[in-house]
Length: 111
Length: 143
Image 1 (tube, rainbow over the protein chains, first blue to last red):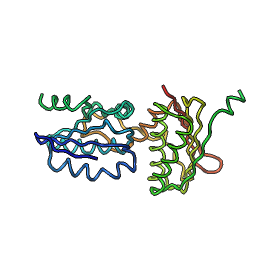
Image 2 (image 1 turned 90 degrees about the vertical axis):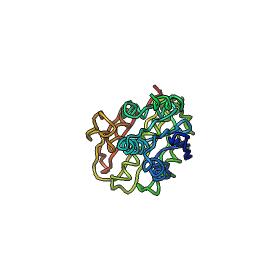
Image 3 (image 1 turned 135 degrees about the horizontal axis):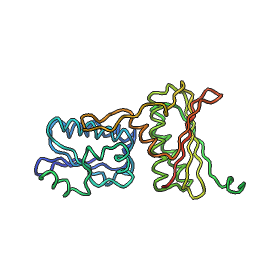
Image 4 (image 1 turned 180 degrees about the horizontal axis):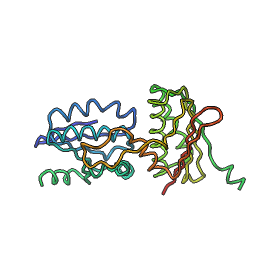
């Protein structure tokens, strides 16, 4: 997991590998701690995530909800097809924006 | 017909229903999928169903052991998984599914795993076996 602060205060988080039960266990505390307290918008790069299960989905719901309470937003960027299908299966794609790339997310933030 | 039956690859895994066993069991399961040549959507969905069913049994099932059998057709386009555990009777198909949330505030944090299992599979069957085990049989396909 890589965390970068972008110029406008937005936080970009890049996950790599598997967001299964062991994978989420390794990153969830750090992910929540780096994103929620500051209340900045968060861009999550999923392009290098090969697998996500319900625990990973649940992690993103919890953080997106906490951010929404601070008037900030979470964007999911470039998920692989089968990862994207998981979000669609639970209708999360209707609640958390899924963008093709970072530029699309930045554009939505500026709109 | 007999020749086709013989070509189906079978793998059986047995492990303790405990959090400490999960990661090694998942790695063994992925190795069995590799041996079958499973790939694409059926492969992903097999990993997804394993993740959700096994983690559910480990967290809630009060079981001692889990047996997972994997049957792959020769081209691995169709995969059948069977999960047996010795916990109390639990039929995942009778559990209510969360509704479609209207906002992120209303999005459920529980019950997502069973939604994913239903969406990922082409058929699901639960039975309580004569040996007093829960058995869930899940079929998966590439399309």
